[in-house]
Image 1 (cartoon, protein in one colour):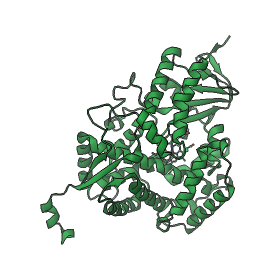
Image 2 (cartoon, helix red, strand yellow; image 1 turned 90 degrees about the horizontal axis):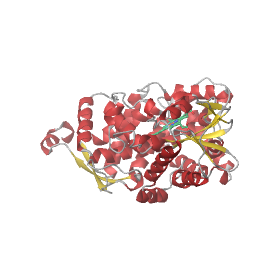
Image 3 (cartoon, helix red, strand yellow; image 1 turned 90 degrees about the vertical axis):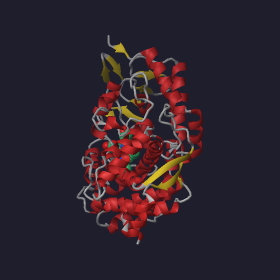
Image 4 (cartoon, rainbow, N blue to C red; image 1 turned 60 degrees about the horizontal axis):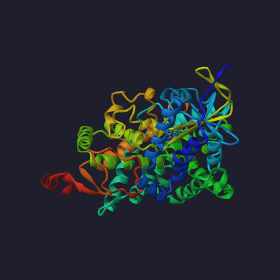
Length: 453
Ligand code: HEM
């Protein structure tokens, strides 16, 4: 007879529900809720979630652990090897389009590749890969994108004389995003971003919130108008000329790009906070920025690693969900078809029983290849459904950091709980970070530079 997978007691299932699942959902899976994030930070809820799963692994072994959820078969992954297997064997038998994810994303992108199963998935994935250039660290429009970042940062620094706050940062970041994705004429289309934010707010509630069809239609009409313009050197320009069948729903792929860049803004703002409190890494960043001066869109491996480390420490996609399309075997034990499989990413990223650097900033590991997928450091997921935008995110965020830090120093003014000598907090509220900006260039050089003339 086949062995059974370990099954959590009702009490332990409730612990997963209250310590892992609910806090993550309450923070807002699709659009973060600032008040809940602030509370989660006060209570360091991500740390509690990690400790809860460490306890369960100690009690039940490596799993996957079946939870006692009424009316459904639900598992949680507890070993890095199993996490890797689930991601490697996506989309079959581990379908990416789980019921909950479909319910959430149906509010604004029912045809996004992330929520597509079956034959059409391959074509939608190809479209995403072709336009985002998934395999390429330097997008073909990198020079243009770098110029956009430089212009927006120059403007941002002008506005952030008193303090660089999340509000100012995210305004500039979304200008960059709209210019990159839709072209220069979309720079100030904040209405589009706000429409998407309202739909994302609904998506946080998945099936519990009625869909606003009219709002979604108006959003898609507005987006389509930008794509029709087909501005050169924008992603929309590539979409407009991409040969695809109507099933691919090219424009239906784009809400994911616009929405997921929010996470990239959060990740880069947190990277700034860590850099401004970790002098050794800050020196490394400055050295790289100096070395790269003169190149229009340099690769900046260290700054990329800093962003990767930011999403390792504080994953912006904390829950990766899958659903089994067939029965699966786990060392002789069977998991039934139609089981929901949860990979809670912070558990693998902050598991201090396995990772000596769990709670400190260790960007170097991303440069030498030590942060292999084997150890389940998966901020951008892995396998065939790995984030299609990872390289573009790293390109734009590293350029953003370089532009901000070139000849400048950012000091974290509030809150000041980050410290290179202490373990980093499990939850970090990006909304409350505030920096002062100081010029690094000595006064003598400034007064003799040609631009000062
Ligand atoms: C810090 C920023 C980002 C992070 C950490 C991130 C992370 C992830 C993760 C973990 C997944 C897998 C989700 C799952 O399987 O449930 C994913 C999927 C995806 N991401 Fe990202 N992402 C980011 C930004 C972006 C951006 C800006 C784009 C597009 C411009 C993008 C495009 C995609 C696409 C198309 C998928 C679906 C891939 C598929 O199902 O085949 N992401 N991302």
